[in-house]
Image (cartoon, rainbow, N blue to C red; front, side):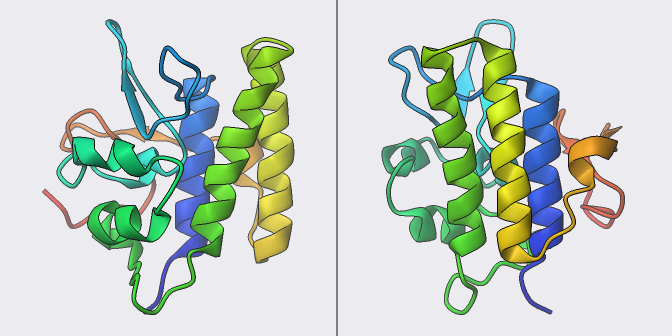
Length: 159
């Protein structure tokens, strides 16, 4: 079946749009997940890793070995096969988040979001994906997946 690039792009984009800020630790480093007192932040790749697959040691590779994290963490529903699938889309959406995060040095979360949207449009063009999710923002709240959000058709058979 192959890696569902469009679905991965949509989920990563929409979740960052909803979150409204990057996933950075107190030192300004991007992380897959950052736990704050009132909520949890995730980066683009962090949103593709379901709770049941997330491991804290992934953070040791947050800026490094993406193939290792993808092999262990990416949602199986996305049909990612690290032995055969190209990780360039994952690398590009991670870079879009991390590079846009640098905008916080020169502005606020609005600056981050504008830069993130610009970079994700570029990722969509580079990979031949439909960027319409960047405008539509179609998210449904899940009651079955530990507070995660479900997109139409995503995890539909999971319980």
